[in-house]
Length: 293
Image (cartoon, rainbow, N blue to C red; front, top):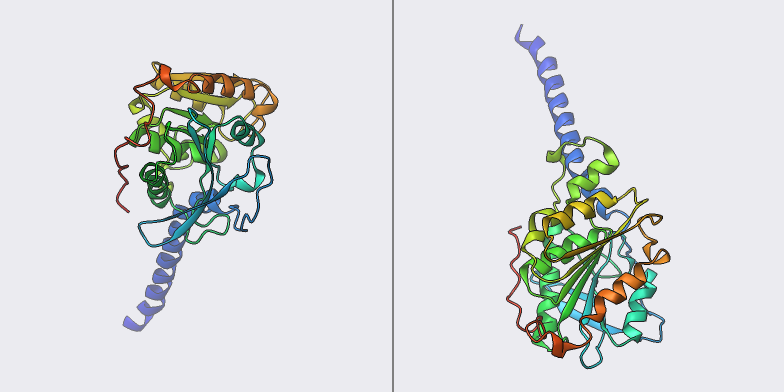
């Protein structure tokens, strides 16, 4: 009878709805994990002998995002730092401040949705915001001796994208992953690729980067294992240098010798007359392309 079919139809609709909702939730779980622990409190003051100043820039979609900047000494590049998923500017990585005290310029990139900044983070928006940040440095001539892009963990995906689209003097990737999907599999086993919408695909673009690259990895890192950095180095043997600190984890490489490797790498950029083709790379960089939303 027709009336007996209605309960079945309703039950079927409920099941379809539940399955659809579960599928949608599963599709966004990796991104929720990626961004869920981000720092949302405002960084009101950064204490260091190397004083930084607010650096505000307008995004394409009308937000004003705050980063932190220190001007370089003559002949020194500006290190543009892209932090990890927690937005660790508040942790004030001491090695960056030590470099600033040595005369390097420093720009701590503030992400949307982090550190009191408005908006919600996403891969596309983070790329576009990085483009805006670097473009402002160039337009206002705030990095006259070029930039060195430095990414940590999640920030390596942003830094590698910016390096592939512009021409910095060098790129430093600390605790990098090949792709975000690979990092998800590292934590969740054989996670289906179709569940992961965010890419941060350094693997596909590292071969396009034709400036010196320093890769730093921890031998005990269970989040972005050293094998990720090894694969990236193999894809750009001409420009990439890889250092694996056997006893280090994800966030303690500077306790195991990373400082010496970073400063040794940076020394080659402290005498701009030796690298006339790279000096001013930021000012001459082409506009960064950004993916469609």
